[in-house]
Amino acid sequence: MTNTALSLPQIRKLIQRQNVFDQFVVLALLAAALSSVIVTAGILYILISESVSFFSQVPLGEFFNLVDPKWTPLFDDKNFAIITLISSTLVTTGVSVAIGIPMGTIIAIYLSEFATEQVREWVKPILELLAGVPSVVFGYFALQTVTPFMQRIVLGVQMFFAPGRDEFDYYQLPGFNMLSAGIVMGISIIPLISSISEDAMRAVPKQMREGSFAVGATRLQTSFNVVLPAAISGIIASYILGISRSLGQTMIVAVAAGTQPIYTWNPLDGAATISTFIVEVAKGDIEHGSLEYNTIFVAGLALVAMTLAMNLLGHYLSKRVREVY
Amino acid sequence: MELAQDQLGTQVKAQVKNFSFFYGSNKAIKDVDLEVLDCKVTSMIGPSGCGKTTLLRCFNRMHDLYPGTRYEGEILLESQNLLSLDPIEVRMRIGMVFQKPNPFPKSIFENIAYGLRIRGVKDKGVINERVERALRDAAIWDEVKDRLKDMAFNLSGGQQQRLCIARALATDPEILLFDEPTSALDPIATASIEELVIGLKGKVTILIVTHNMQQAVRISDYTAFMYLGELVEFDRTDVIFNNAAQQRTREYVSGQFG
Image (cartoon, rainbow over all chains, first blue to last red; front, side, top):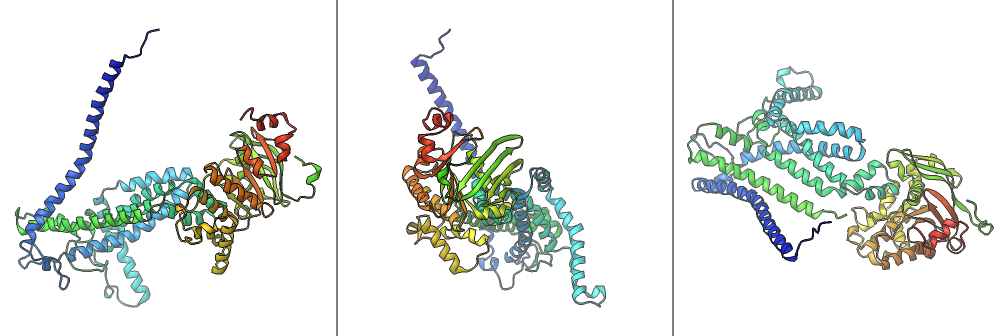
């Protein structure tokens, strides 16, 4: 038998070499982590510096004008009331949340608490497929399928409650409207919400469910009274991610909600959101460094601020209600 | 397994008759006969994997939650075979306390009120009164009466386990099942749970699984010794530990294996 044991100096040398290697790897990991911080800081720097140059030409009062808001930076008579774009961003996001959160949560509860293994194996890949649909496809789905459908529904509702008029005397849902865009945006965030919520629910320990069953609760009672509250921080995180994605969603709204920057809170109207405005302007030929050019960045900054506010709120909420088990 | 003559005065609360249980094709409980006496503490002991927890979980039909399980034979609950009842009904009548404290993500008060709400109790006065009584019966009232709105997770492990006992007591179960209730607790918390179980004697029928033999001696009136899915011996606790009939029981309680 050969003696494989190392001498003490050999061991020390080995450890020393290993320590140098470990330090190198830790530094590399740190650099990788820092790169995301640097990119974020860089983006914020560009947004803020361009916005500073914007605000040197446009008074803050004009930007936050709520009295007679107009957004016409590309016209001769320039107006810069950001609320015009924020309102439509919030409306489309609101519609999408009204669709995506209930649907996503219900699907998550079903998959986590009720579905058999076989059903789950079928449904999950299909949901993932839905998540993989490009947003431009969703956009045209909204414009070509959902909008005509909603137009018929809006007409049908009117004919039901006030029958007898000529078809063209009724209110017609415009071809570009925030409702259809919001609905499809809601569909597009369902997979995100359902998969994160389902993960959170499945992470709830089995014993906690059994505790509920043991006092005589049904599966439904257990899901809603025990599993849902136990998984709430993960569920809220999924909502926040969904809302953030809707706020920043561009293609669906640009295709289906129209490009007119109109100040409105009515989902039946068509109006440009912040992201729609940014692509519209970026597509056109505007002079680099001009005021029009600066508006892209100030709109972008407003969008980042909204998303950031959402994330902070989500962080606060999920921390406040976090459960330990 | 029939008991000796001197137990005739006590009523049988539940009777396991020629009972077997299967995980898939694996026969985990083999032809067990057992009598659980009313308002007594019956403990089940045996080495790991002997099927004591599996048998306990048959009493409240816990296995029904998972696919691929099957019961054979009868478990009579006052002459009714509980295996042919709706599992929800069985669980409403037979409470359970688990190995690890498993309070719900709710306030202390709501943890106890949960079972009552499930049963459709809406009267606030009734709920308040039964919650207080359950917490008193579980000897935790004095510690939590000023913080009923606190989250149950903020309690210590021992307090959480007593809370879980209170949760089970709140709905007046006919039988209370304990699945190694002190295995996750320190000795002081264990002592308080044992004291509590002894205090519940005469009020509720208790079936407790333990792999601490001394615990069975301290708290139980009757003891069942299980080995490899079979019930080897069932008798008064003092008989099992001092004068067991079976060779295997004597070997186990004297620590020769397990």
